[in-house]
Length: 309
Ligand code: FAD
Image: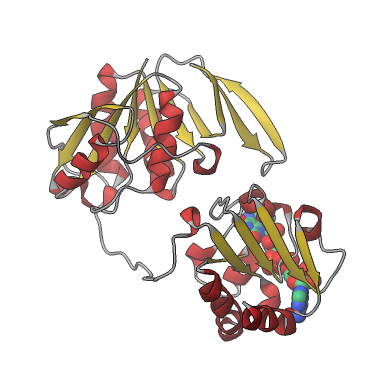
């Protein structure tokens, strides 16, 4: 089976989620990659070095800048003429492109897989991760998105893929890029951070959120996350949200501060290796998944903890 993995990148480096998608694709068969973007020659070279990769299709043209799915999907559909499976990381961009590819190929998408059982059979979470379904595709071509935390990352070095330029497609019909406001941060990226400190509704205000959470995150070299309640209340930006409708994370250490542990939040972080919960309510559901629990007022405990680190 020949698989085609979409490479997520920021025009300079390849995102970790791609490496997990490569590992999943390798369980299906031969791994080819597609790099689309503007001035992405170096990304294509880096992609060819990923362990286990065969061919790397590089589509370098203005039309692929900003990864509009309306432009990228037709390119992938064309490449799917000689591939059996399209594999994308289940990131915001991957989830934007894959359904369009599936629709154009007229096949069902298998979303957010956790494991590859055989060439057509996968497991995936349902009911916010409370049940795991085993699903089998009967389509001739597969379209699959991969949960990054469920697969080891393929090594960035060690491969010797062959780079091949592919033609520039037409215009992105129906949409155009207007602008992007990207929050800049010195902190590690949430989905690849080894340590995450997340704050919840209990923080009460944006300034309090940053006053309490940021120093602890700084001491731990951690990324900062938040519950949806904290994001909805404007205490933290949208891209901090962890959970069913936010980011799925599985760091070495996850510190949940003033977060109750609703199932939708747990769906995004319960695979973390060690969970530390700080909450004044000893019956809060977060303590059912926590390895270490601190019961008390976060406004007292967190600064105390930070000062002792
Ligand atoms: P709360 O549930 O209000 O909990 C606050 C906690 O802080 C309480 O446990 C309280 O005891 C504690 N506390 C209060 N004061 C202090 C103090 N001084 N010191 C210590 N502890 C204190 N939520 C997500 O997080 N991510 C998602 O992706 C997500 N997706 C959703 C999707 C759907 C379809 C739905 C319906 C909901 C979703 N939610 C999601 C919302 C979720 O159900 C909860 O409402 C949310 O997670 C609650 O956030 P919280 O824990 O910060 O707030």
